[in-house]
Length: 115
Length: 109
Image 1 (cartoon, each protein chain N blue to C red):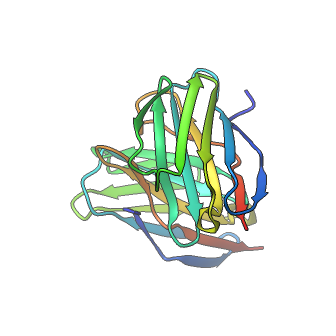
Image 2: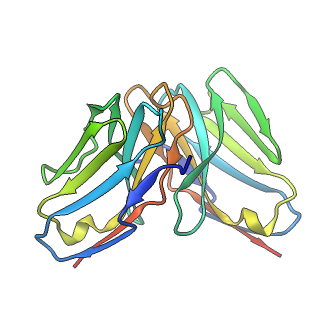
Image 3: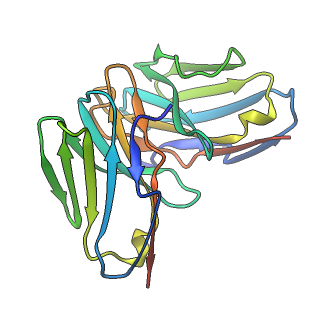
């Protein structure tokens, strides 16, 4: 298996633009997580899905952020409109069972820069 | 917000020495995990210890958990230059998983 795949790896955009980050979890994993990592706030859980259903989105910072998982092999995290403070590395992770009870496999991340 | 707090924030040692990193947390947990992150990469799971376990080994890694003190330690024995990375503890409560700020380990050859 190729592991968790994220695209793009780097994204540079201007304030106000829409940004869409993509994630393909490991086949067979039924949990998918989106994280954001910054120097100031560290690694934060934004939202997670179980069997394509959003379970907890309390970590999503604002209404500008939205996430979907239309099927078991694809998820998106959208920021609209983007702001400079959204600049961060966004990670997607997946796990096989049990929410947080098993190891999570992380993707390489998308480094987002909002100018 | 972060729950786990790693200590120290940075650690620099010589190859062959042991490295010990500590993690403290605030609320009760079901399990605690340790992850490694190489610069510019995603996190890699190292080891998971459940709340009813006190010690766990995996290769050169040894993890302890003291739920009464709400703390855990990660020991890397016989360190190598390739162990240079940031190490994070992650705790799960009832509703989410929280990562600490990490310990930046540098192993000098």
